[in-house]
Amino acid sequence: MTSIAVVGPGAIGGTIAAWLAQNPALSVTVCARTAFEHLVVETPSGPITAHPRVLTDPATAQPVDWVMVATKTYDIDSTAPWLNRLVGANTRVAIIQNGVEHVRLFAHLVPPEQLVPVMINLPAARLAPGRIVQQRHGIIAVPSGVNGDALVALFAKTEIAASADADFLSQAWVKLVSNSAAIVPALTLRSTGPVWTDALAAIVRGIVEECAAVGRAEGAVVPDSVIEATIESARTMDEGSRGSSLQMDRMAGNRMEIDARNGVIVRLGDKHGIPTPMNRMLVTLLAASGSPWVSRG
Image (cartoon, rainbow, N blue to C red; front, side, top):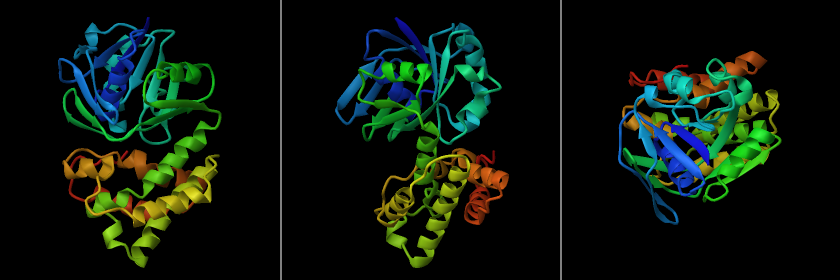
């Protein structure tokens, strides 16, 4: 039996844990701050229930075959006590987070050869500990190779479509480009569609094109069609549409993943000598928006 520990059972981690636990060949443990009796996820196909082992104290953890980290990027160092107990010489650690720097951010905690970066698109919301609503079917992409193929196999009996890609870098940057414009509704707390103007269109285009330029400098293939689709999605966003996690966190007064979402565009733009004035300005404005929990990297 393959043993899996999920660190961070929020909307993403909890959904993943519940789906994996449907497979009797997998032993799933959840590492959480708050104990709960079981997981209930309302999925597009109906509710699923799981009864994983729930740990709240890292001292009670033992090495497993797989660790799946699904915390926010600003909580990386808080995973260290768990990783110290869960990771053995043959443990593989899947990093299921936003952004494009998965391996770099965890390299001080786990040997890089044991890390598996994961790009995920899984719209879900956590209602309470152990209670989650999954809005749409999800997809996962990982780098091709032995580790990536092994992770894909874990999801074979779930409704989360997992695949290994030889050009994972491009997958990660395409997602970041698609998400980069979400900083606008996070700032305005309005859907972009109803307030769309030529001036707003120019701002959104600037954000997205800067992100694509930096991704291409990093070696990613970002088609122009991704840029245009992202702008069109912003233009047609309905009033009251559920915003990104960035907007939801700001509305809830929570810390925001601003560095992983848009700050990285500025930082890597500086590395390559690529100007990113639109992202730099909006990152600065969001950091000054009044929330004491904004993550500045």
